[in-house]
Image (tube, rainbow, N blue to C red; front, top):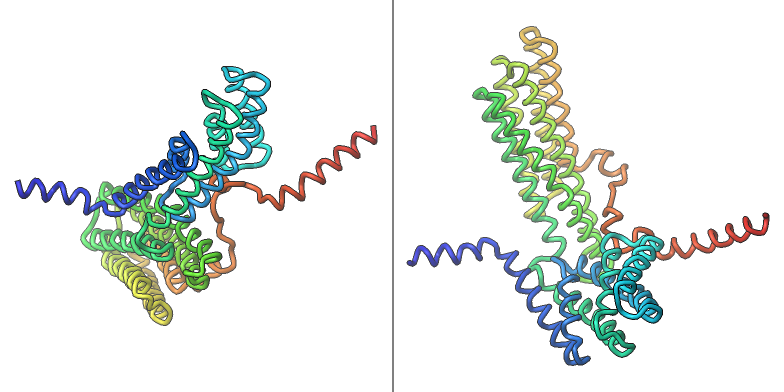
Length: 397
């Protein structure tokens, strides 16, 4: 019995972050219902629904979702009330409301979140028993729900956005180092195509984690712009380290693909397996050391030393492969020597010295994730020009 209860408790303790988030979401929905009921008769349900839709795993994302709800409510309520005024509540009103709301969302270049919220908010407003007072109550209840979600989202995580960024970068770096360690042992002892395929599969899974790291680093960067509790310089440095880790993971996947191609062609010869194994082991150690430096906030000179040691290991591998060139065919030599370039690129990412990190703009958040794909300022400047262009074209006829 004791073992059974231990397993039950472990189900929750091993998922402490998830448990915290669902508890916060539940409390937020309850608080929204309570505030909505106190403010308006029957306003609690709408507030709870909107709060559940708006709350996310972080303050930044909940603010964005809340703005989407507020913007959707403002647009949807106006369209809904106008539709009901002409058609009364029924199938025509519902269909027309959804149609017009979708057109308006498209015209304003709203993102995916707000585009969905516009018709949803409109349908909530024009629900059964619609009247001017009821619509006003539902409109205010929607704003209450979004506001409560923003407040409670602050408690969804125990750590700060910068802390979560460090955790995600460290987790991805440790997985990359572990994979390189496995490849180093496999190459040194001899590996099969099946084993190389598993390495490549694990490398592809690592690539799938890159968007979440970039999103978290961007959240920390934007959070630091308006919050006095965060350091903007630290957030910018973490964002650069997130990009550097992305470049590192890409090189790890390339190494896995190179080893798989070698396995398909017959495998790495015995003349090079020890040298390549040692080089991959050195790369794994370098990434692990950089992760430790990030976690202990001791990056800087230590990162430079780590990168220089890895460059030295890459140069040593190149010399050894060139010395064994006569004992390998040309295709195998080209595949093996390409690993040197992968190691040098990882070294450039570890000390963040590569121009690919500093001189090339990294894409930010996808447009579909934003509340508005185009900023209101840009829209305000574009629409008058379009209207004036249309008037001039009409007058020239």
